[in-house]
Length: 328
Image 1 (cartoon, rainbow, N blue to C red):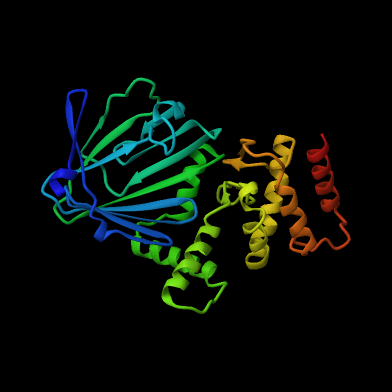
Image 2 (cartoon, rainbow, N blue to C red):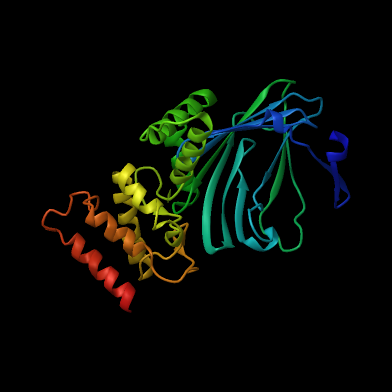
């Protein structure tokens, strides 16, 4: 079965082999994922801070230690049409950085910085296919069997490469994989531990998996040191259940979500319909951010001052945004 699962492809005269994955060795938990690529004996693991991912690749096979970094890749749709602009460059032999403009749901830019814990011994840029804008690199590393390569990947939604590098320096200056994993686990336990339920193991697993799904969005696009700005607000999907639950379990976050909706409205001229990466794709009818804002206000969750007399005009300003969005 393993040999049948081996996939060989020829690309511009070169032969590539895609590895089968050993599903029995797969591990998934909040803040951590691991998988084994059986054909090459590579154990791939990842954990993260808020804005920086940390990968650990352990090479247990006989072949050379290589890493493919594919900046053209994107989930959903035709990858040759998603990236419409790309400015990616190598940073010596220890990584790369850049900015891509991508059209999928919305037209957006994102910047990143990738850093290795050791210099590569060789790097090759693969040929682009028709329509592709972003590069693919294959890096070689001098690793003995059983040794690991650590890779940091930092993102910035609005601050460019400088923002990604700032996030990396602030959140993940070191290389202690297990420490980052433990911190991520502790943070997730803090979120999921807001609720204690009774039941058998299957019922608890089902409940806490749903609670985990509740907490993986909205996403904070702000760089380190800036005021939170949450996007991935699929309000049409979430205003009935997720929105009210945020106000009950995570009221401080719910208040920040409302602030972000109002900021989004100032940027676009209307309150959120379905936002992603700071842009609105307007893919649903109605403006379901309005009941989420009003619900948080009625419960005293927003504004954070519990609207004591609205001395600064925050509530009145929000009302005007609601009125304009729904009537103009």
